[in-house]
Structure formats: structure tokens, C-alpha cells
Image (tube, rainbow, N blue to C red):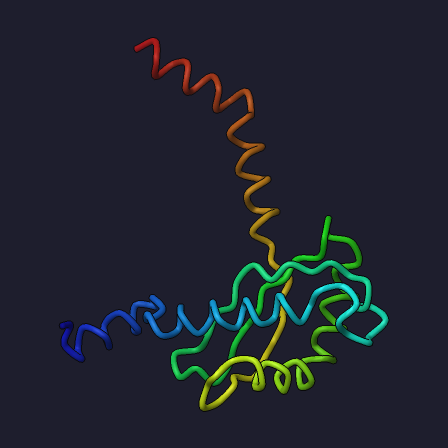
Length: 139
């Protein structure tokens, strides 16, 4: 079993602890159920198809950031603003769905991992990278 100083070292290094990951995944599933089309009354969210890609928790589990992406990125700023307006309501619904002593405060952010992945893929497809790879294979 790891010693307490090993736990402290991992949290100082910015690595999430096992509990943070587990609670984050439970919150992600609960939010995904709540954000299905037709579940919320907010006009921006009522028919929106929103994917919750990840939920990151603070080390004390009091604050959670949910990274979301609307289908095809449509109306992303409006949807994130609507989610921020709905955060207290969603927190209450999560409190009934997930067994936690304290439900964390929710914040929402647009997940830009898809954009980063597309930029990386474009770079890998570029002629310069192709030329470098050919040079390594020839030598």
C-alpha cells in the first residue's frame, strides 16, 4: 500500500488521484444522462446534443470542470453559456443521482481536444513531415 507521502507527491505533481478520477467518471455519466436532448427546459439546451468528454475535479473534490462539446461544434458559445446558467439546477439533479457526501460546484468549458487532435493530424499529413519520414527510412 502506498505511503501518504507518495499520495502527496502525486497530487503535487498535478496527477489526479484515483478518487478524483472515479468521482469524475461518475459525474460524467450523470451529466451525460441529464444533458440528453429534451431533458432540460433551457431553450439552448432543450434540443442540443451535448457530449461530456471529461470531468476534472479539484484535489479536495469541491469543484468540478465538465468539458463539453456540442454535436459538430454547433452553437458552442450559446450552449456553454446555457450550461453555466443551469449549473445550480444540474448540481441538484446530480445530488439525487450520485451518492456523494458533497456534490462539487460545476463549471463548464468547451473541450478543444478535438481541435488539437485535428491540428496534429494536419501536421502529420504535411509534406514536410512526409519528407522527413522518407529521409529516415532511406538512411
